[in-house]
Image (cartoon, rainbow, N blue to C red; front, side, top):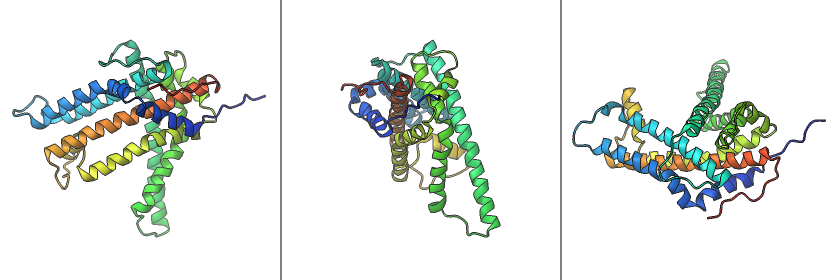
Length: 282
């Protein structure tokens, strides 16, 4: 007789993930503060330095890598905060546990993005062939953008389970972490995929609005320069600074809420749904 499948309480879990962050702003700022200060100082040095800096041509790329490292360590600290009520450190620690988490996080992200990239490429090829074979007019963004969003969610469903490896790693699980994550996620691919999208989408939408109002962050300017493209209209240094700072803050907020959702989903599935109210006290 097959075992009963525990279903994630999607809307409550997403709501709790948001509540944990916004009901505990001090805890979030303690977790993200050091990274925001360090990255802001690094960016200001790059934008307003009076003399040429070593490696100035690649400093935006280094800043981007610093942001990704910050998101990984913030995610680890926030998972520990949600799952074990462990108070975050003002200065992030980089020990063996954190390095193990980062290594697995890179693998998990590579798996998810690999599937999304491969599936997205197939979608582009399919749409292109459809336009050619049926002599359709070129598809407008009003058609392609919704299709891309639908495809993203659909492609995320079969691989979303691997994301549950992240809270398991934060809880110091060993041995077959990825396969156990798949097993725990059985029957919850849709809930996990939609939950992740609901956690990330608002912040990605705000980023689009900010880019239209202020311009793109500094690393996107750097990529455009490497590709020989011009960003029009060209933003001022203060606009670049503001856009980059807001991008960092939104990225850290999105990361905290997303891993908070994964932590709560993991708790429901790891103990077969026998959970109490998991929202941290402010």
